[in-house]
Image: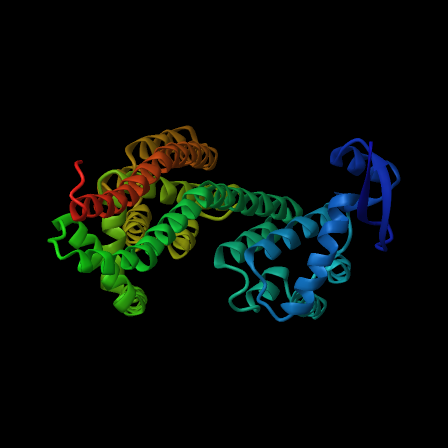
Length: 409
């Protein structure tokens, strides 16, 4: 048994905080429900104590930071919980304001609450907060309001955002070790070339003998590192800036996006990532009552790949002419064939939204497996490459030392 710190709401809308004993988080939530409370958060007391100072420090240091996607996900989940418990919308926002973790979130929720109290719909109140809520999010809320199923839509939105965050976190966690290994490798080479190798130059110069070619290469690399290291870094940074600036050009971005999903080996992975995002977004919109034509227009605006977004626009035009979704997607030749066939089956069976979600799940799993395999191969390759570079430098120095002192190899 462990102690859990909780935040909950009474049927009258009052926020309560406290600590209770339970065997797990679900058990703590169940116990709160048995007490007649609406659970908002339940966290093990030890973890909550450790997180509280960090949260206060973040609120103090970054009180004016922007509301990010993770904040929106938490707000969405908590709002869904309150509405499903039967609280009115303005009262639910009042409670969320009291639970907000930063002044910026308080400011945002206060604006939305005031707009709702002024007679605006929630979707219009959210749309008024420019740059905070995506068009996809706002249209999902609008569909929920039209169908009278706002709490259900909020739950689906929260699940959608949690899945997207879980995928990003999984990828970030997977690349952490390779990134650390790459940084260590680069630092090791820089130290060898910039610090260690130059110390041997006076020895080789005083010996009065020719230095082997491979040693001359290493010494030259060390000289470049010491004399031009900062210039190289500035040049690389400038090159990166110019590339990012060039990518703002729509034509350049279009060509780049096309090459990214058609490139050998990695192109298939990028295509699957985009297909999973496309399918999940479209399926979520359709399952909440958005028409297919409107849903495609929304999905097109949310897509990160301009080449595939153009294909979605072409499919939308064909759809308006009564040709359906799957056949025009196949004719573009830009979408994975398995996904297109699954979508066509969904159209034929009248379960397009369910099939789109199945496509998303399928490609999410394939992406996770592909990333795991690639990273499992990347790590030993990086280790071998690092060992080869460092070994080459060491052998070059030893070879020169043996040559200088006429020692046999």
